[in-house]
Amino acid sequence: MTAEVVTLGECLISLIAVQPGSLAEAAVFERHVAGAEANVAVGLARLGHSVAYIGRVGRDGFGTAVNRRLRGEGVDISHLKVDHDATTGLMLRERRVLGAAEVVYARTGSAGSRLTPDDVRQAATDGLFDVGRWLHLTGITPALSETASAAVTLALDLAREADMTVSFDVNLRRRLWSDEAAAPVLRPLAERSDIVLGSPDELIVLTGSSHTDPVVLAKQVLDLGPTIAVVKLGVDGALGQERGGEPVRSPAHTIPIVMDPVGAGDGFCAGFIAARLEGEDLAAALRSANACGAAAVAAVGDLAGLPTRVELVRLLGDDGQDTIR
Ligand code: KDG
Image (cartoon, rainbow, N blue to C red):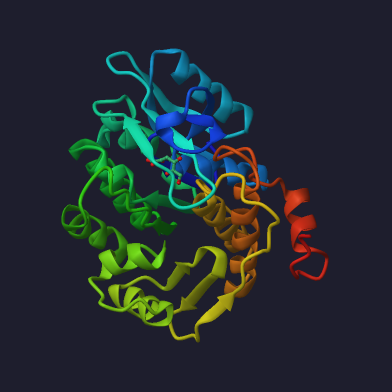
């Protein structure tokens, strides 16, 4: 086991409407592999980093598709179990160019939601937390079940003991739980993470803030305990702040057409983590994150647009400035 980055969560099959428009009119769907942490894992692997993924899929063709895709992308799936008693989770969604896309989940009781602390313990016994430098978590997995939530907490405990860097992407999913249920579960995870990333509305729920200003939100996140706060601002790029430092703003890449906005945040995280693993400062990490987020939305599906190293270098341009036309 030699992965630099460890992550865990639920891998889903995402059925995406082929035609843009309302879900009510969608008749033909395309199959994609999705799941926030898996997206980040693939993003990192494409950028040349070694990643191990802990999770479960069902003993069905969809689980096989997930397995093949992650393995094909170079993600270490030795700890992606096949659960014989549940099916792979599904997500169906429309393609919408204007506004948020409607999503329907079929994941209650899914294999991914049956992740347990024992799954994480097994990965630890096999050395994943001895070798890893970085643990990436999101706020989706704790929403899936009591055992999945406990698995996330155990992974965080192990990472802290092993002195790994921990990033936590809030990823509030209001189809899975209410803000009132989410906040008390997500806050302790954020408090014990090094880097917290989220959109303003997610950070408001996390911190209990009454402010929408990203500068104020970043400060409130730092007050919880992390050393870096990152506010994802979509078309306005991102704002990051390091403890003791000034807020750093980073503009978004201009892209001619958004093909599919879902997965932008995961691409952003992959770009950010990769840059930090390579020793880049906050400003450079935000640039890399914005470029990867932009690349993700320029293709349909969560994974298709995630850039390789060569593509990222090209996107950033030799001088590190935006060169997307
Ligand atoms: O960030 C994209 C994810 O939301 C998508 O892949 C599905 O993980 C997912 C979820 O639980 O919504």
